[in-house]
Length: 203
Image 1 (cartoon, helix red, strand yellow):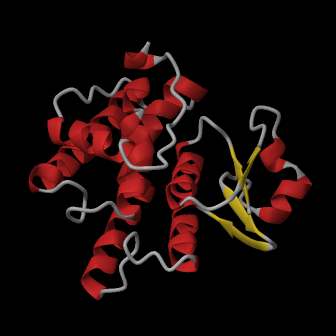
Image 2 (cartoon, one colour):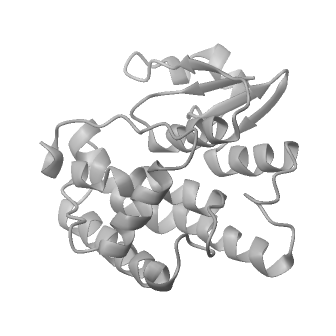
């Protein structure tokens, strides 16, 4: 099983983190984004969108970080990470949508400005980041993880960009429940961190 990734991609880190938490064998293949390797013909055969991460499971190719999380949980029968019960499954899907929406256009976008020089309106994306952080803070007020006492792929989908939000000048100090949740994820057996850069508030 190969995971095509880049160490500064939060999307790729989600997949890397979940593979490690599952304790399954895998190989990391770094894609040189700066050199345009993600747009090269060989890579585009794996993922025509030209994005990381991509999981190649002995010829079964899965692109998109959320899809990889779902695939791995189902492949290994890990209903603790992705329950089959309808309400729990729907709640997880909601958070996967948040990861692709509010997280991507909030803390992720703010970090893209500082780390990669992306062309976003800084004030706007930082404000979006604080809106979603406030909502996550409220959700975690009475819970250890997003769905309850145990971590699920919903937590993994949100972790990376929230953990590194200060790199995008998003101050997380006021979100005590969020910070405690990050620490609980970081204490899970098999946890691997998301590479940090000394930039923004993290400088």
